Length: 230
Image (cartoon, rainbow, N blue to C red; front, top):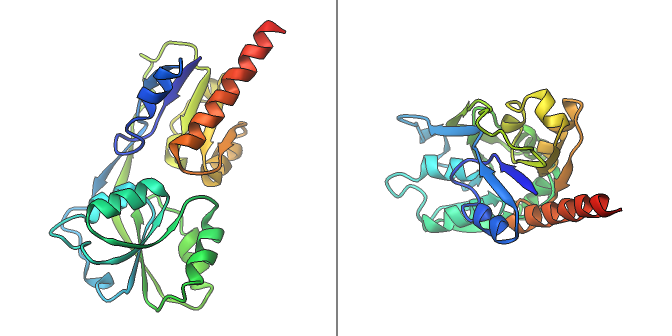
């Protein structure tokens, strides 16, 4: 079964190797790349007790001059939490699955004090920030990185059985005829919603983990095998 992975290079580094060991034919072609905002001004969030990180790219953009060391931070997903721990930050809260609403609900149970910093990029949705604001807390959003799209390279000329999409930004790059000819695998509901908005269908890996992506791809492979022999 042919699989195209579209995530950026700073995520799921071993996924291609694991899939190939399981018998998949894999092409890794990142559809987005991120770039830290130069000369980022941290002054507006320095007095925030909590810093909420929405992605590995956000961690990498702020990992300068030890600014994260000893910080009380919250992470969306395992990969983000691991990136933060490598900076010696205090990961006091992590949400593995769910959506922005469930993340906000669990985080607010910690009774955080205001103001709260949310660190993301120029394409970040404001859903999480809005849920926290709805609890009458001040949110200061810091745009730490910018997102750029790569084109869909036509050197990928194999039959695309499955395409793994991990962000709404990546969804926007896929040509319509390619998406309709493949099984689309969405990492999380936000990405799935972007796919559905384009009029396409998808299977959702509910947790932002490699194991969840592998589980979905194995199920798709089994389905294709059964269809071939029935």
